[in-house]
Image (cartoon, rainbow, N blue to C red; front, side):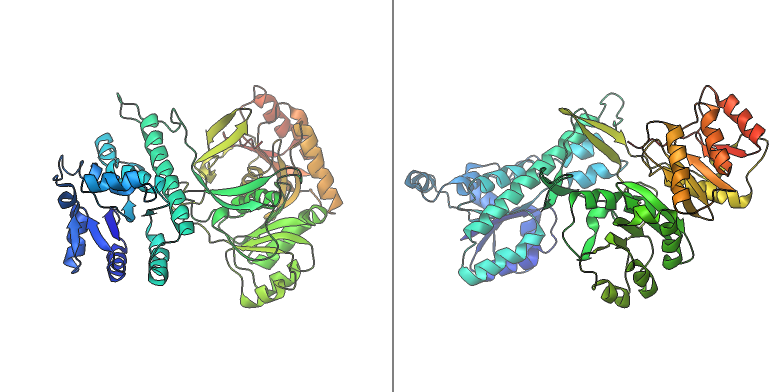
Length: 524
């Protein structure tokens, strides 16, 4: 049995090659890999000795040879193939171990040049992988270090790699080639050769996602569904969650959980977000998880029933006891105490997810956010940069005679952050670092404002002295009048309407403060 090894990432390759050798597998390798294995005392045949042709063009050509591809592609069940190998003095290769030049990592560097990118496009590696994967019935193709242990285990037990494993390895190999080629296409399609600049949106978009699981059904029982993750998911994103207990997540559970998690992780202090049908129905900040939960729940107890609840801080026993008093579909947090988990286990139907918070950083990916958002339309896609704008206090412009107090300013910033995650048209009343009324998804901004007031009334919350955030500008003064009539004393909105002067004058007339942000947060 022969194995050809040619790897760029040499993690674990020495131990793997040693195990192959102990299983009686003869090793063939290329330049740097061969040197490494020989230095560890392994007997290795150089590919150049196998082909009778030296490496050339700085290593660009070394495995593109019939002695390699014939050994990989020959079908053992076809006498004509085996006779051809014998006629040309070619020996069959049973195992191929290849990982590719690090193209994705190379082009991810902000200072990557076109020359660097081109030199990191692997040619011989993908060609060998395709040959071996095509002939999976006879050849095991290993493209990732995570596969080493399985291959060795089967060789040790059966002196062969099983047909099922060979097929799975081949599928993984073709998936890897697809990802690799897609990354090359994305990079080159995004490049303006004249200027050397890259576009955010390439001429051809190649989505690359890995299925996590099939789902019971989609938004409705007659729809099929599955959930996928990015090939390189952002740390702290929902797809990195570990489910600790509860039933299988549904399509709607996942969509709502993502809305809750994206909102709650945007706060730096202990926060609780309750989501129903993709909209926050209660959000609050506090000094601890329990207080934040009680404040968030108070906003809209009716909608909180059967809701999705997310925390950005650990869940302790008192918080778990309070949560146990209501029906919860999904509960998310960075961690849980042992006592809290033990109590939650009594609620077997509650889906409990543990998600590490993102590490933070200057870029959206390190903050756990999407860089690009995609929406499916008929036979096409809408793509946009994700709405990752973070409003700073110094960006806010007071446009009225009256200015907000420091406490009101903090509540305005809080309400503005919540409004970003509410479906448009969005109106959010807030006070004391909690939502008091949320109006979402109405066709009229007036109706959203009225709905937010109705919600507050149902929860027996007063809006007197509250602040209000609107995700887009007030086109007329009537929307402002509605929220002020409800009790608001401060308003935050983007501004930008042709009637801004009229709305500002109305705010001064009503004796309320108003702040412009210059940023709109539509969410459809």
